[in-house]
Amino acid sequence: MTQDICYLSATDMAAEIRAGHLSAREVMQAHLARIGSINPKVNAIVTLHAEQALSGAAAADEAQARGEPLGPLHGLPVAHKDLLLTKGMRTTFGSKVHENLVPSSSALIVERQQRAGAISIGKTNTPEFGAGSQTFNAVFGATRNPYDLSKTCGGSSGGSAVALATGMVPLADGTDMGGSLRCPANFCNVVGLRPSVGRVPQFPALDGWDSLSVSGPMARTVADLAQYLSVIAGPDARDPLAIAEDGSRFRAPLARDFDGIRIAWSPDMGGLPVDKRVVRAIDAQRRAFEDLGCVVENACPDFRDAHEVFMTLRAFAFESGLGAVMDRHPGVLKDTVVWNIEEGRKLNGTQIARANKLRTSLFQRMHRFMQNYDFIVLPVNQVPPFPIEQPYVTEIEGIRMESYIEWMRSCYLVTATAHPALSLPCGFTDDGLPVGMQIVGRHQGEFALLQIAHALEQTMGVSGRRPMI
Image 1: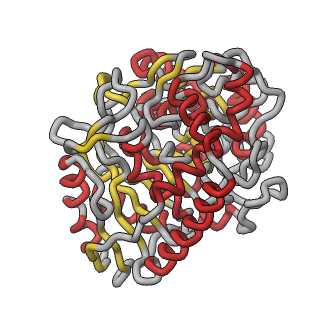
Image 2: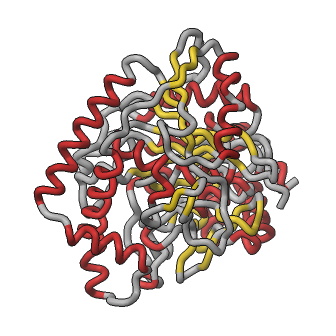
């Protein structure tokens, strides 16, 4: 019974609570039991507020009994990435620096979920300050992939992806700079959306003009993802980059006709080294697009300069956000975070100006490319999940990686274009490891992206496969 409840879609779970077929208490008890059974094996939820969650569920049932208006996430347990501030709930950023931090206020994305009726149960694991696409840190240790406990779940929203995949929560939030929503969704057979900058406003923020890092939703189905996005999206005057469009538009029906829709197909992104198992899994689903009526052509945008743009602006962001932290706590931060900060300190104004100019040209090239194509299909990651003991990938198809982040080019080159991208389950390797495809939409075109992902999800039938844990 517990597993039956926990693997309901978030949409169905909310409907069952509204209809009175399930109480918020029953739902919460089922999820807490699931966490007690599964979490010790995977280490996804690192801070748990079980008593407060049960109290919140009781309050939700009482409000429903009084006939009060119910939000779209009424009674649903949610977990928050440990980079997001949560009032009264420990927030460590995966770092010894903040090991005992308990914030006095919550991030806007957390507040919006709670206002929509969701009940916060705890925090999910992340690498230190979200740096790296392998979820481990000195505070809580590593999070394991539920499809193979000897493998990584990816990162940096790894705890969120594993909690979803194992039925410990129906919804979980994340953040994405170079692939932190897309990578773990890919490695754990769930759905993750990197929305356009400003789609989900970020407050508080040290740098309100940061256009690399975004917050976004993760879920087990695209319909759940859309419902979740409808809650966390929408304008906020405190974020200067916030998109004015109301989030409620993402509650519209996702079904549509895709006849004649043009798809650019590039499983190697124009020449990146990509593991043959990844290419094979993506290419096997080309027929799914054609069955929808799409016109699929081999084509790839010109990603020239995207690597320089991302690496320059990422280094600048690390020095801006964490340089003072490193100075106050010498010898505490992990070596890759220190490296990023030091790279930022080497930059001069000319280099930063060059990166912004190159990014403008990149965006314009991408815009022109997307006049001919509605969507682009790319790999999410260039490799399948790798051993948990390995901090990052150093070689792909015989080609050495120059830095700890370079194996994530397939994600961060897209980040540099400022276009929304979604990780959708599309298959498995012969040894049972998940492989996803990255679908890129037009600028601020999240709704169309959700629509095609929803249609493909029905056609491909991969998302329903659960880990045997």
